Length: 88
Image (tube, rainbow, N blue to C red; front, side, top):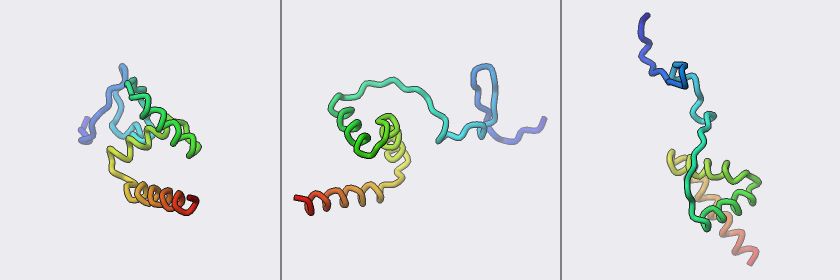
C-alpha cells in the first residue's frame, strides 16, 4: 500500500487518518484548578453573553492560543467602556 504522507491518529485500538476529526469540533475533557475569583468573573461574563461558562472558557482559550478576534475583543471593550461613559 502506498503512503499518502498523512499522519494516522490512534484512537483506542482503531487507527484513523489525521483528517478524520475536525479539531474545532472534537472535545476532550480537561480537569484543572482555577482561582475562584477568575472562575466567578468568567461565569459572570458568560452569563451576560448568554453562554455556558465552559463554552466561554473555550472561546477565551481559542482567542488566546490562536490570536484570533483580537481586534474584535478590543472593539468590544471600547464599546463597553463608551457605553459606561454614556450611561454614567
